[in-house]
Length: 200
Image (spheres, rainbow, N blue to C red):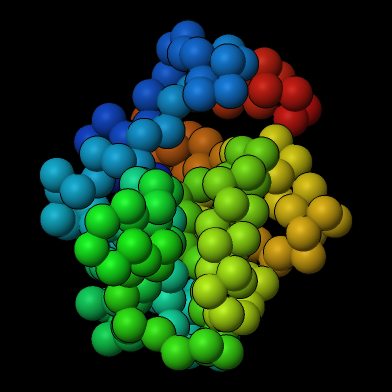
């Protein structure tokens, strides 16, 4: 039987969105794996796979409007909005200093409940930032959906400190298991990645 998440993990690997080696992350930490979901905009078939995966989770939730945080989250949000035929807004990373000076792009009403789309979660800092902007504009909601949880404690930290509930479509461990099942990597590489990241 076909496994959509395994197919998605393989496509992420084959397009180079998931790489193995020695990388320095935005935080300055070293990592044996790099996940770059900014490149998925180049691959329409991958973007469609991702949108379907998010839709499967979002279909179980009640909300009024999707929101997505630039930069990596925004094209995902657009693809998901098209897949689900749902409206989308996005909080700006930089406040607009001209024109309308908006902090959020798109049309919404105060009090509407939003679910935030992000690409992945490490510390959860960007998700907290996005919700601060959304709440300041009068939107409600405390849920976010991400494609991959890097299992670095971000989900637990956001829940404890901000009351934000994050649902991950895949954990890093699950993604590696899918790649092993598809014959793309071996157990030794999985163990190396999880050990270096302190997951096991």
